[in-house]
Image (cartoon, rainbow, N blue to C red; front, side):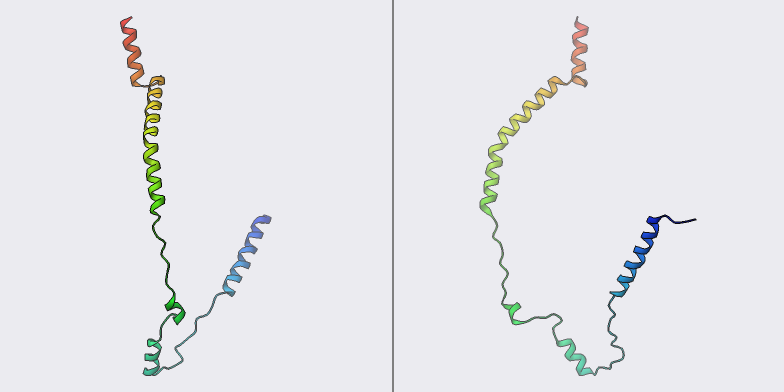
Length: 117
């Protein structure tokens, strides 16, 4: 049984990328062979773990101020638009309830009109 061209291509691609990934793997240094004296261990522990120099100490992070004007303008815009939005909502729901032909409210009204006639 012969494999289709796509599966062969996929197998070759997996082998090539797997080999490339293994080739890029870095080997960790082995420190077991080296004996360190107690003084060397203490000096290694006392050194900073990160590269801290005087330039990093002098840098001050600028904090962005809170944009109170933009927040205030947004609140004012919402307060101005809220009554118009509420009025549009009420009008739309009123129109939808009047045009509703399927539902409990419209069927009750029709039954009541049919019974009276």
